[in-house]
Length: 219
Image (cartoon, rainbow, N blue to C red; front, side, top):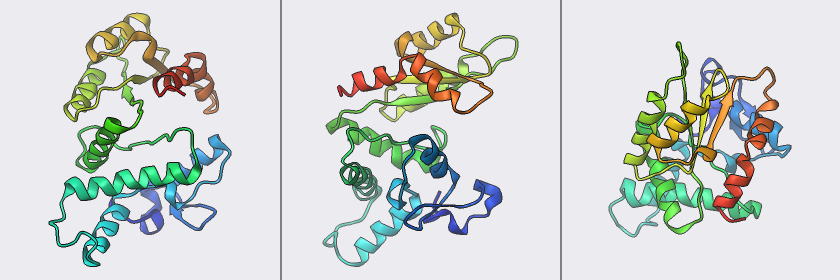
């Protein structure tokens, strides 16, 4: 979103504000990540469009661009990339996991997808795309196919697909997604409904998601 932080957002939209240890007002996503990572996160672990545009405008006003025309590419995209790399350096991380929120095709997410594409040209990356597989009389793959197709229009080929569904993904459905989305079957992960949120990472581990990702970025 274009807010600098979640402090002024109506809690009916994103839930109550989650306050980090350094006083940053985030939405509840950051709190969820803290629970799973058992780690205190900071203001630097959340990037909003408001933060990015504010930083770019402040740099322009102070003359840091030396009179150049400020544009989406390269200036806004570079700001996003630098913020991602800054956190990775600050944490001395072996790898940096970045969630790009929203839906492929949303105008708000376009700069972030472009930043991710550019990062992949110089950094070892693994693109994980979450798709929805609805179920009527059978599990349907058209939404997944269209979502991946749209993502590829931005120059990003997913390495792994996580398929959200009510039941575990059927083998013939997995084969179909693999065929039409250009992703190997073993790299298609079934994220089916469970009765306890803490079972989700265990299901991912059982399907070797961790090994696939680490192998892709060669750690």
